[in-house]
Length: 428
Ligand code: AMP
Image 1: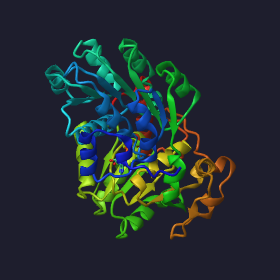
Image 2: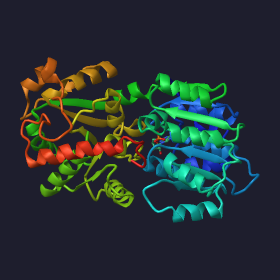
Image 3: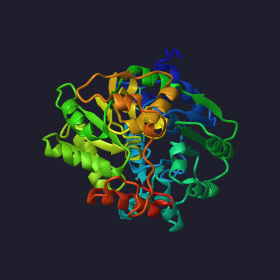
Image 4: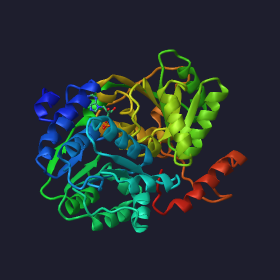
């Protein structure tokens, strides 16, 4: 959709315009120009938009503008996000856009001691950005009071449901005041999402940005058909090219993410991995090292990478294709942020061939095939059982792995370790 408005047309207060000018943002993104006017009028909203569309500013700006100055230092806005990284980034957006206003915010997430968060709450804040698990813990300990909430935002609702947060969310919702403005964002729509949205929102405005198509169209995408055993060699060959300046690599498992980071470091390519098993400090350090160029490569799993706000990623490499086609769109959207151009390389072995077919169906186009040293016709032509992952049985000797080497055993153990993750997984 054409989007000729400037921020000046949105009737934002001067304090917010000043912050936007400082960021050198002049033109609102489609989700911003289509949400902000209704949000300023106090409407509830359901926004179908993925990260990278500018959705954070779409809710942060109206909240900052409409928040009343009564009840200073009482919590008037609550934003729930699925991961600590996303929560931290939303907190950062409140700092950036709220620089010339007097509201105070804090970010609450698990995986670290609660002491500092409790202190921040005790000092008094106007805005809380939180992951659901830690928020509930603190609510149960009566460390915060949500009676004065005027704004409630549920961000990345689809991911929240995927991560099993639904019960936590319902518990939080149950204690919020009835009268409030509620905003609901999700990258995808489903029956379940719709149900949750209906329970939460009153006569909402619907805004759907077709970022999937537009973002995807801006990205140069290539597929490399390859045997799984050659993927590391190809990766090295690619990463040694100069124009791959800042590369985000995706894997399906934490184990594989670690393995690749290790392999690259051994081959003198500075890299680090982020995933749910890493401490918050280790993840923050890895992201900062990547942002500042200390490391050229960051290896991530889907969930860990969601919401990470890094602007200058030159290339996304899908070392393994995701089994959910939507994840492909999320992944490659990490490059080509806010209108820039980017490149995405995807490695596809025979057993991932059907994943690629699903992806191409979703994005409604064939991805260009790259000619390269390790090209595999077998991978390219795989159909039927050969185009799917080999069936895995989770346990022990009959695991279905052809070579049950100690490495594979370790992998199996890791997998069966997921038994412990059946409970909703927090702080991923
Ligand atoms: P988000 O979808 O909220 O994660 O935002 C994606 C990126 O776009 C972030 O780096 C924002 O700082 C940036 N951004 C947000 N709004 C604008 C805008 N109007 N113009 C340029 N960049 C923006």
